[in-house]
Image (cartoon, rainbow, N blue to C red; front, top):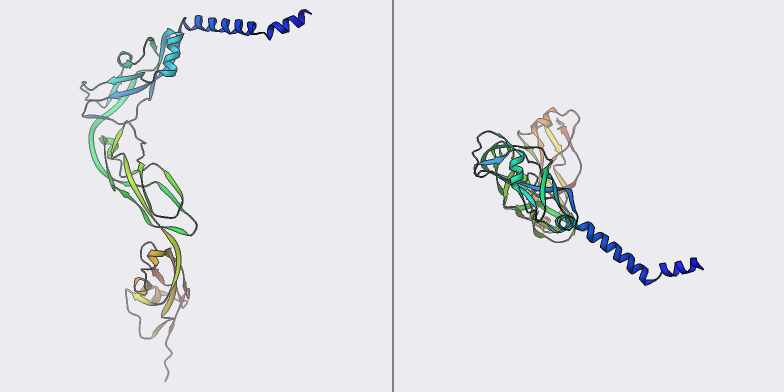
Length: 316
């Protein structure tokens, strides 16, 4: 009987209401109690206008903070302005190595509303700086384009502008010869497109890059194949002796590319070349022509694949 009454009481609204009230009272009391907790603050360093970092510094500092549970709760969940900003803009920095001590770190702590920083457990920050220089370098697309079936990318992916300006520490900037965009992949493309992409921010806080976005363009065409007949064999860097014969003297080449690009191709745009030295030095009688094509056109094959080199028979 007592067990039955106990179960009824546990399932009653009064029990759950009392439990909820007790938990709320405990939580309220706890959150009004002062605590000490650890927090990571984003670190920002402002340098004099004539100095730049050579290496990326620490991204954050560790601090112990003291405050009520309510205020700590608010800081962790809702306070996005807390940071440590070390302002060195008025400092005269002549040496490459500069040490930021804990006093400077303490002065740089900002945005800790209703809580107090009690201890900094990060070590003093050592930064390496140098003179600022500026440089113009090419920007390369780090882009993968996968055309839809039956389509192909014609030519290279274009970037506009083709160059970016970088500035920063002279020791860093002098080592940089090119920059790339962030990686982007475009699948199942069946027509040409143009879009903006961000540049890579691999040296953030060390090197500034302008602009921070570039436009990339890719030309997509339907893929096609054609065969061009009667391409003449040409001898370069010498003249074939009258006693030598290359046969056949005409070949066919099969090409692949964008349908619009192939429509422009004629036999005059294709060269089938043999080097004079390779003919003279050959002892097999079999030669392979070098096929030269317009840009953006792919060679599938040539027929015949090889040529014969032999001497005329002197008929007397």
